[in-house]
Image (tube, helix red, strand yellow):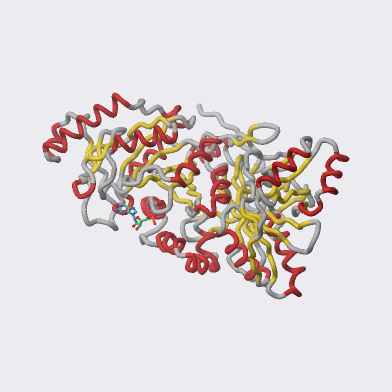
Length: 542
Ligand code: GDP
C-alpha cells in the first residue's frame, strides 16, 4: 500500500508535490549572438505546443540586433517581460526556459539569471565553434556546477568536422564531452542524425520548415541493415567508422557526471529546420536535473521542504511605463506556493501578500494559482524588492552566490532640465536599489556617477529614467577608471582614509564609501599607502 502524508492546511498529498518538483526542468540557453538561440527557443516552444506560429520569438531576436529597434521593443515592455521566462510542457514535464540576453552588454543580467536555473543548453554554431560570449557564460555556469547539454547548430551549412568541434569544446572549456547523437554528412549533404541514446535513425526532411519532423526509425544498433537501406553506402560506412571512433575516444554518457557539471552530452542539429530539437528535448527530459538545492548562508534549501522559499534574481520595469511598478522575478526554491499567500520579505521583515503573482507562458502572462520549486514567479511591486532578496514563510534566510559586478564603465548622469536634478537623484536611487546600475554620489560636487558593466546599459537606463520617471537625462563620459568599495577593520583608520581622500570618495545608494580611481596607478597608490584598507570590486547584495 502506498502511504503518503497530507498537509492539513492545503490538502495536497506530499507525493503529488514531489511529483511536481520531479517533473520540472528550469534551464537557460547560453550562446554567442547569432548561434541560433532565438531560433532554438522558438522551436522548443513549438514542440512544447506553447506557440502555434513560428516567428513570435524571432521578431524579438532581430529587433535586439538593431539598437533603435531594440529600444522600441523594450519600450513596449510587454514582449520582453513576457519572454524573459517561458514555460511549456513536453512529454509530461514542465519546462521553464529563462531568457539570457545574448548581447554582451547585458552580461550582468544574464549572469544573475544563471543563478536561477538548474541546467543550461549551450548552443554552438558548427562553423564557428566556441565563441567569446559562450566561453564567458560557460565560466559562470561552471562556478555553480550547472550541468550543460551542448547543441551544435546549423549542420545544414558547411561547418567544422564533428571531431574538431568536440575536441575544441573539450580543450577550450576543459569539459568532457560525449556525443548523444551523430551527424550524417554536413551542409548540402546533411542527411540527418543517428540518435545514440535511443538507437534511432532520424532523417532530415528538406523543405518542411514549419512542420515537426517525424520521430525517426528505431534501429538495432549501427549494424542494422535498415541503415544500409536508407542511406547511401559511403554515408553508412562513414557513420559506422566515426561512431566507433567517438565511442573509443569519448567518455560513456554518464548522467551523474553530467549532473555534476563534468561532462556535456552533445546533440547535433539544425534549429531552423526543427532538426534535432526533439532529441534535445528528450535529453533534457531524461537527463537534466529537476530543481536542485539552493545554497543560503545558513543551510541548503531542498526543493521538497514544506515551507515556501524563493529569491529575487532579476527586476524588470513593468509593461506600462506610466506606472512605476516593477516585476521582481522570483525563483521558487521550495514549498507549494499558492496565490494569496503571505510571505516574509526577509530584508525588511515585512509581510507581502502575493495577490497577483505571474507565471510566464510563452505569449500570455497568467496569474499563478500555484507553483512549485523551480518555477519562476513575477511579483509586481513598487521597488521594495531588490535583487538577492529572500521571500520565506518566516525563516531569516540569505541566499548566496548571486553575483554583483564591479562597475567597469563610469559616466556622469545629468538631467537635461537642471530643475529636475532632485527627480533624477530619486530615479537613480531606485534603479540602484533595484540592481540595475551602481550609483555613486561624490563627496565633493553635485554630480551623480553611474557605473555599469556594459555600455548599452547606459542607453537602457536613460530610456527608463525618461519613460518611467519623466526625467530626460544625458550620460557623459568621465575620466574615471574604476570604483572600489572600501572597508577596514579599524573604523578610525577608515575615517582617516575617507577624510584624506575626499576628492576621490563617493557614497553608494546605501551610503557606503566608494573609492573612485582616476587610473590604475591611482588605485595602486591608494592601496600601497593604506595597506589596511580593503578595496572591494563588488559588494554583496544586501
Ligand atoms: P541568436 O542571436 O543566437 O538568437 O540567433 P538567431 O536564432 O537569431 O539566429 C541567427 C541566424 O542564424 C538567423 O539568421 C537564423 O535564421 C540562422 N539560423 C538559426 N539556426 C539555423 C540553422 O540551423 N541553420 C541555418 N542555416 N541557419 C540558422
